[in-house]
Image (cartoon, rainbow, N blue to C red; front, top):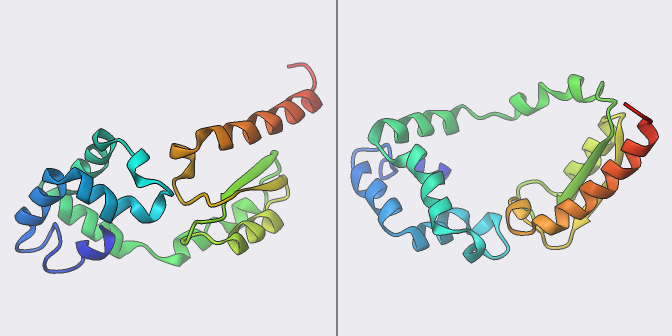
Length: 158
């Protein structure tokens, strides 16, 4: 949706009412086009969740314009600005990364691991994409529980 948001034919543009209506009227099509790149199996994303994601962004012309402005404001410097804080993060930090994510490649998690003093490790989820925690929660929970068990035991009694 971000790419189309900035176009004249996007949800906030002059013919945006038709685009907004189509996004919400054809939820299976919107799910595939808007979220397919972030899921291994986009059909695992319930249609009511698709509606919940889209309505705040494109439900009205004003919302669509606000989303368009927000997308246009995104910049790499915003992420870079948190680096000093990450370099001071000493709490145990487990990174669980999907190997199929085209937005955040494995080199990004390696950079984070090297940057965060409290990094306890990197676990990869084979084929997992950006939203793998939503469709493959068991893969995430297994690693989180193991990490918590180790660090809870080493922390001693509260």
